[in-house]
Image (cartoon, rainbow, N blue to C red):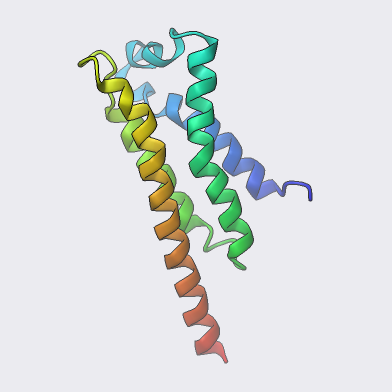
Length: 128
């Protein structure tokens, strides 16, 4: 099954968001991620593929593409906030946040998907 336009947009935002979220704090913050080498960037991308992969899965669970915004906003919000606030130079344990952020974002996507499905059922029940 080919990816739809919406799913491609979710994937592109998911790939670029960890870097874009660091831009407001300056180029030094972006370089904390980009100066680590290819393996580190692939690792970061693989970890962040978990929540946006769940967002793509949510697109098949939700009938309305408008309601897909709910899990995407929850998930991308957690990812953006997490990567914006994570200072890798603060202490030796800070890189653990690179693993924790996608896990929290995946939980947020699950909650957002449940909210979207609940709204969808309420609207369907009301219309019937």
